[in-house]
Amino acid sequence: MSRRFEDVTVGDALPPLDIPLTRTLIVATAIASRDYQDVHHDPSLAVERGSKDVFMNILTTNGLVDRYVTGWAGPAAVVTAIKIRLGAPNYPGDTMVLTGSVSAKHPDDRRVEIAVRGVNALGPHVTGTVVVRLAGEDGA
Image (tube, rainbow, N blue to C red):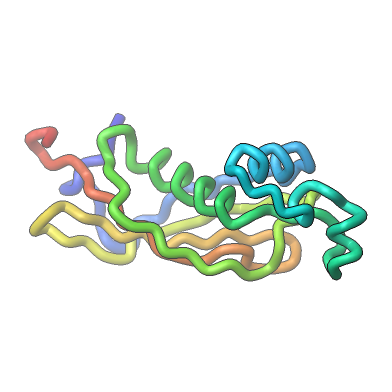
C-alpha cells in the first residue's frame, strides 16, 4: 500500500529499521555497487590504512536510506532527492538503526521531506534528508 500525501503530517515518525551489519552485507554491496576500494573488502588492508576493519561504502548507505523511506512511503512514491552526510563507520558485527520523521510537506507537487538518521554503536553513521512525491487522493 502506498501512502497518500493527505494522510501524512509533519512530525509523523517512521518506524525504526534495524540493519544487521554483517561482513557479507558490507563486502557484497561494495562489490555490487562496483566500489572495489580494498577498505570495503580486505580486512588486513583496511587495518593497514587506519581502520579497525572493513567498513560500509557510501553507495550502500545511500541505498539503505532509499530503501528505508520507500518502504515506508510505498511503491507509488517517487524519490526526487537524497542528501546524506556520513559520520561513524558501519563495521561488521554491529547494527545500524534507521529512524526518520516527516520534516516538511509541499502541497504544490505533493513532495514530502523525511529527515533520516542511522545510528550504530559508535554514534550517527548517516544523517540526511530524502524527498519523495506521494500519490494524492485521486491516486495520481
